[in-house]
Structure formats: C-alpha cells, structure tokens
Length: 192
Image (cartoon, rainbow, N blue to C red; front, side, top):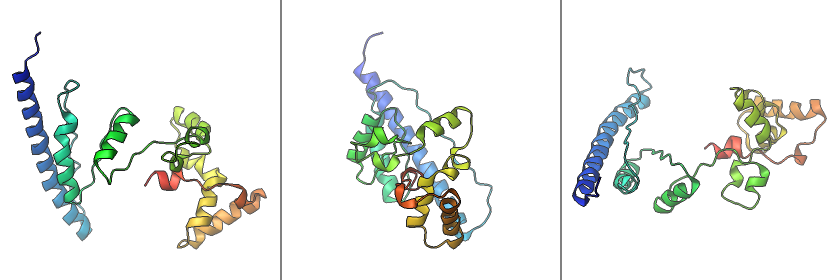
C-alpha cells in the first residue's frame, strides 16, 4: 500500500471533527450532570462511554486533542489523558501547565533521586503489589496497618478527632513512635 498525503489529511480531519463533536456532546451532558450535582438530585444520567480511535502513529491524535483540552479546561472541566509512557506524559505536562502527571506507587528506591516521583512513594510497595496480584485491596488491608499512613493522619488531619485518636492508638498499642516514620505521601498526596 502506498503512502497518500491526501488520504492522511482526510483521515486527520475526520478524526479531529469526531473528537470535537464527541467533546461537545460530553460537554452538554457534563453541564446537565453539574446542575444535578449542585442540586443534589438523583438522576439516571450515566457516564458517557469512552470514544475509541484505532489509528496509526503519527496521524495527529495529540495535536487533535490539544484544542479540545484547552477548551475543556477553559470551561472548568477535568480531563484525563492516558498515555503508554511517562515520557509522553511529560510532553503533555509541558504543553498543559495545570496538568498532573500520575506515576502510581513508587518504591523509596525508585523515587529517591526524582522529586517528581517522591509524592508517590509507598513504603509498602512490595506488599501492595503482592496483594494486588491476588485481587486484594491494599487500602483495606496493608495501608490500614501501615505506620506511614497513621503518621500522615497525625500530621495532617485536624478536623476528625476520632480518626486522630485511632492513629494515636495504633502507635500506642504497638509501642511505636510516630516520629520514626515518614508520612505516607502516596495514599494522601499521590492520589489527589
């Protein structure tokens, strides 16, 4: 099959038009969902299904969504862009000043020399990975028993005395000193 610049241009225009039409339909639905949420009413509105574009590298997907992202942000909407590599995520973050690059749980070793990854440190990463392989929820098992999570509560939670008391009890029962543990940054900062 031979390369046809005209066909590529036509495909790019079609994709960009579809992206924008999809965004507009989502935007209309988002406005309705916001009105319902602000009124705290129950609704049968469902989340709009994802749009899938099965196209080749270099067609212009990133360029095509750039104006849509800009428009969405100007309307106060949140956008999630999922990419296969951290390098590509960094490229998006360079173009979108308010973008947040999510890394997932990082071991202390993975994040030691990388300031961007430090808020994603999980002191129990190996245990969490093992739990995940067995379809367990780490927050219900491992995180609940992690002193780093309880240290975070003692340092940052001020409006929930019951939660703070439970954290104090966690250390007292185990005869541990909270100052010996760094705060869990992943569970509380990395997920925001």
